Amino acid sequence: MPQSIPVDVRASEIHGQGLFAARPLPANTLLGRYAGRRLSPEEIEAMDWDPAITYLFGLSDGTVIDGAVGGNALRHLNHSCAPNCEAVETQAPDGTLHLDIVTLREIAQDEELFIDYALDIDPQQSRATYPCMCASPACRGSMTAG
Image (cartoon, rainbow, N blue to C red):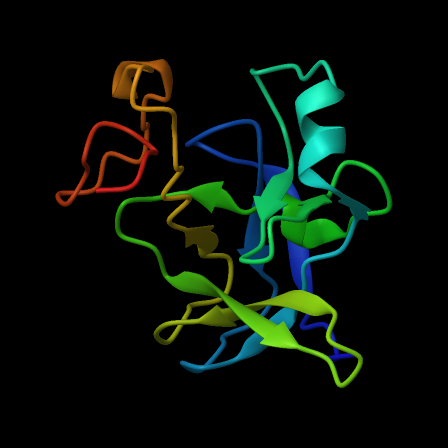
């Protein structure tokens, strides 16, 4: 399992708690592996979720990692339409999929760390249901993909 880079969880100006670099980080730094319980698509459908805050991360095989249960500090990554980190799906020798979080550029100490959630929503849902608060010049106005 990848080593974790020192990060701090504290209040974010974007939303709730955020994840911040505890020291300067170069581009392509592995921050760690997103952790949590694994859920099947059927388990996700059957659960009653609080839409205000979830720590769900979907994988290409249809499973979902729920960072709220057994998760780590990486669950506090907030969304930005101009992210400074990305989630990279990797496969273990046993076939298990994982999500590693990697910096996209140099990160200053105390800078908040972001990924682009690029939420995939039902076409019947409005993008306005998932408003973005990143305030970046590249802001799409929604945490949804595209």
